[in-house]
Image 1 (tube, rainbow, N blue to C red):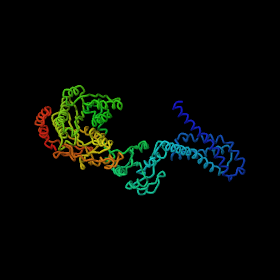
Image 2: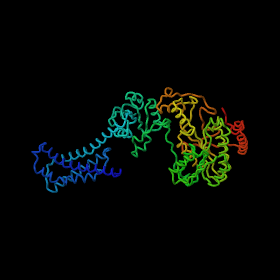
Image 3: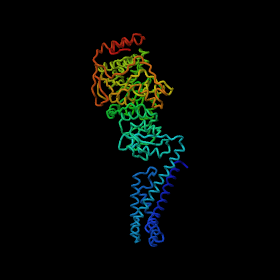
Image 4: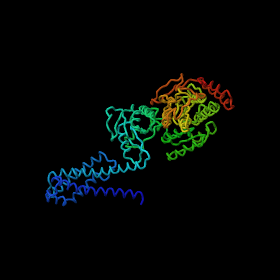
Length: 620
């Protein structure tokens, strides 16, 4: 028997069982009503009334079943029955009693007046019992299966006593796929303290979490507060993080609206939850209007930023998306991902180096991209300190090649991905990106193409970011290496940063540098400690933190703006625009010619050449 036939058979059997049960309930309710009316004595019942019960048993049973069917009492999932199902039972029982009353009145059959009240009472009571006893039996079976299949039941504390907590506790108690047992709840509403939610006591507020964990021997903590701010979630998570418990949270409030809250939606707390950032809001309509129907080229499209650019651009329905990358494996990965997720997309993937002027020009001549996102660059600060000429060749002259081709072949808009390390740079990578910004601004003054740059800080999970490195060090048993106890950085997730890049690219402008608001700065030492705790270890006990000293070219903090620049707000509060700095374009390009010769001749005085172009460059 196929699974579908088996399921249909089981459904038919359950409905048939309920039909038979309801028939017996209708008959039993009539008999019990008379029995109660005559003081629980069968001998005292008037034989005429008893005869009427049996005479009209079939019409009574049929009318009850038909009415129950009309009120959908055979279609509900009684394992999850609630107020709505109880309401339907009340309406159905009242209607069935009225129909039974009319049957007997219209046929001239009599019954005692109190019979109807007792009949209604018994019919309702037996109907509820048949439905909710099924629910109780199923729940007991689920719990028994859960205990049999689980080697260990985790003692769980729920943070929050709202709708999400109510649904989650219900599932923890009823699901057969869990090993979580709720033992207590904490909530910041003082009016709720001491009260019960689904039999679980609310024992304190969030400040009491460490004490409650010890008192109730809690092993797991579930944060069921999807409606509160990210900042508050971060505060609670940091407090929970000190307990050594496993922490899980709900992704978002929309799942409450869509009735998607369930234990399957719980996820481990990630490092992003500890940053306390509110979700970034962007103008989707503006972005879609900017990209839809356009031929878009993304250089460095296989990298962490470039690949996310490709994902979000593909969703905006461009006429064509061209991915260009020198590293074939990354390009292949994003190609296969987009083929799966956007089969309708006109996608071209090209392997090329942005340094190769003739190759870049041939690509622009053939495909004529209307929008270019230039994300290709060397970004590792310490590595570029060891190979400064490569930073100049790839970052500076790669950008120059792509910008020149965009100008030559009529690209409408060119968006370059920059970095806050370009501000008062202390390293070659940052200085090279500042030269790239200068190239963009120089071309904006002589080209019909709109050239802009977008400057932002670190992104979580990108290639070369500290999070993957820290995770590897933790998995290896430590130590986790931090360069300096006071070093701070600004962080944003890759999708958030890319969304803002796309919106910034949609603004009409030329020669502007858009600066993204990265939120509050984060101490890298705190980030390391939190990541160790999230991995289930105690910092400096299980996993040691080791301070290694600042690396070559590394600053304690990054700046968003140079002294000469001023910020103006855009329509999005998270995107500001910096004023272009005046410069002599002719002299700038002459200096570029010189640094080109020095870089390709592997000159050792490349830093002096960089300082000549970027006066704010101060190598340390």
